[in-house]
Amino acid sequence: MLSRRVVLAGPPAVVVSGYAQAQATSPDGAAQFVMTLAQQALATLAQPGLSLEHREGVFRDLLRQGFDLDFIGRFVAGRYYREMTPDQQADYQRLFGDFVLRTYAGRLGGYSGEKFAVVAARPAGQQDVLVQSRIERPSGPPIGAEWRVRSISGAFKIIDVAVEGVSMAVTQRAEFDAVLARGGPESLLAALRARTTKMPATARSG
Image (cartoon, rainbow, N blue to C red):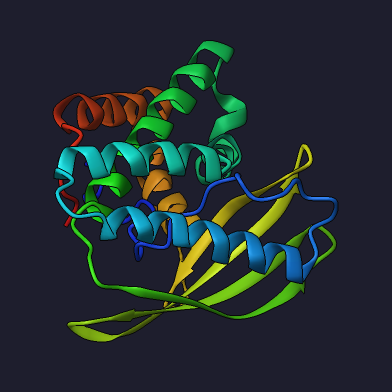
């Protein structure tokens, strides 16, 4: 069974690729990308009168644009991705993307009153920038989140999120490894298919 809690299950700092085209993955540019586009998501949460379904629909669009779901999908499948047939790879990427979008949008739709701030940004290797952020919550302690940003095809994209030091991609990879080790690619595809079929747009993860 796939966990109901881990895929991108972080704070409401959703980002999209609407910021300026990435000339290079510079710390300042990546930080501005995360800050500007997180504000777009928080502005959606602040609008009065929006239904939960509408909020989740907006977040699905933001997530689809802001995260490189194909890259993340390949990473979390690990070596098993190379063992899949082309048809299995296509099915997996479609199901994985839908699973992520539905799970995260459902989680984010109920947030309200949070404040987002970029704390720092630093290079991570030759391609990436790690953008550190803090989310202030009205009913709990602050949450620290670190966004790994990469310039892909001339635009900034998120390729991982670490919440309180726990990497989304690494956590999901461990979960998928367990499913794949037991039953191979078809087992994972079946589990994802069952989850996305049963999970309405307003589903909660928890």
